Image (tube, one colour):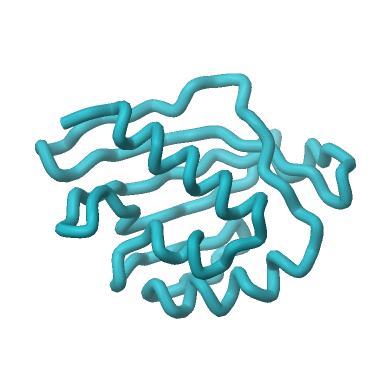
Length: 126
């Protein structure tokens, strides 16, 4: 178990997103991953993640740094639960309305650590 490996996987998630690399982004997920967007769309599998993000990456949406470090909890030696915060900008302008809390499950696979699930929730006042 290594939190450092999870931190590298999270860094790759941001790098591939900000590069607009839909194939690289989707490659960070398991073949059968469950991916739920902030508006509730459920994508099933790496191919659906890649296809959906290809269109999304045509816009100039970039991920920013969170003020808080991600929480990483190993459920087993091969499974980690991650809760992370995130911000983003559109066309270079920070958008506070896009602040999110993201919950992910990382799984150690023969390919290395990959995300098996992703849930993005917008932060909003009740």
